Length: 107
Image (cartoon, rainbow, N blue to C red; front, side):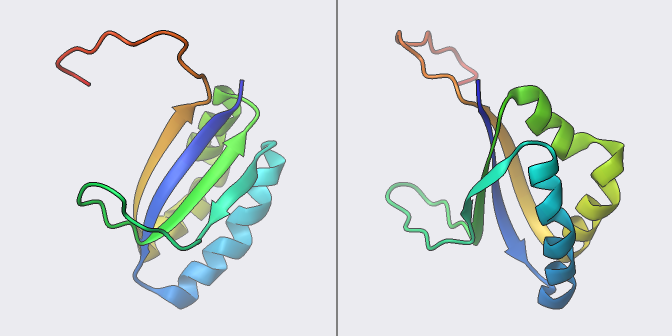
């Protein structure tokens, strides 16, 4: 089942960030992933979320997406991103609920 990494990025240092982009792009494909959204225009429809630069990546499964985001091999590249941008990143399972979830105090 596919899994998605969704990232909201605010770039602080554009030139070094471009170096990050050159290095990180091939790693997504190496993990079987692909970009679905990369820096496209956004429109806030509800709430106060003001995303800066949105990126959505699809991976074949949770394990490969998680590996891409956390493996030691790519940490030097991820550190380039952290040094040059503020980032919020989540990993989302591609499952579609077929029944109503039971909501609790956590969400």
